[in-house]
Length: 293
Ligand code: GDP
Ligand code: ZN
Image (cartoon, rainbow, N blue to C red; front, side, top):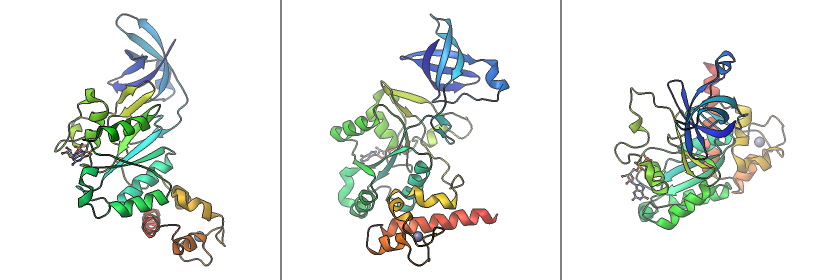
C-alpha cells in the first residue's frame, strides 16, 4: 500500500498525490456502505492496480485532524486571512468574523495585509496593526510587487495545508499566483470567487506548493454565518480575552453588563481594544437572534 494525499475528487474518482505522482482511484465499496465520503485533504492509503497508468484503489482514510465545511476540505492547518490596506477599504467586523470562524476550526492563523504599496492611501492601517498585534495575531505585510514579502509569505506556508480567506479584490489570487506561478488563477474582475462559475459545482482542490506544503484553490469560509458557534464558546474565540475569563466575578458572566467583569475592566484599561469588544457584542447579538428562530 502507498500513502498519499487526496487532492481532488470528480465524479466518483479520487486523485491521490503519492510523492508528486497522481493516481486515479476508485474508493472501496465499504466507504459507501459505511457512509464515509472521502474528502479532499484526506491522508489516505491506496493499493495500486496499474503502476504505469497510475490507477489505484482507495483503501484507507486516516483520521481527520480538522474538517472544513465550505469548502469541504480535511486536515487544513492554517487560515491565511487576506485583507488589503485599501482598495477595498478594510472591514474590521468582517475580519473579526473570519478570525472567529478560523479559531472555531482550531486553525493556525496568519493575517496578511496586502497592497502595502498603497499604504499612504489607507486611513485604517495603523489602527489595524494596533488592534491585531495587541490581540496576539501574526501579521504579515505584503505587496505583490515586493518579492521579499512574497518570499516571507511563502515561508509561512511551508509544512502546512493552507486555506486563503478574505473579501474579494484583496489580492488572494494574485498572491497565490506569485507563490506558485503554475497556478494561473484568474485575477481582477474574475477572481478566485467568481471564477468558479454559477452553474458548475466545482469542488476544492489541493495544490502542492512544495514538500508537505499545500494550498486550497478555493477561498475558505464562503459561508460567513456564525451557525457553528455557541454563545458560551464565543469569548474563547477571541484569544486576547482568554486570560481574563476566569477572573470575572460571576462564572456565568456574559461580559456585557455584569459587575466586576474582567473583560470590561481590560477594556477600560486598554488591554482589550474597543473594536474587538464591539465585534464580540455584535456576534453575541447575532447568535442570540439565531436562537429565537
Ligand atoms: P482576490 O479577489 O482576492 O483574488 O483578488 P485578486 O487577486 O483578483 O486582485 C484584485 C486586484 O488587486 C487585481 O487587479 C490585482 O492586480 C490587484 N492587486 C493584488 N495585489 C496587489 C498589491 O499588492 N498591490 C496593488 N496595488 N494591487 C494589487
Ligand atoms: Zn465578564
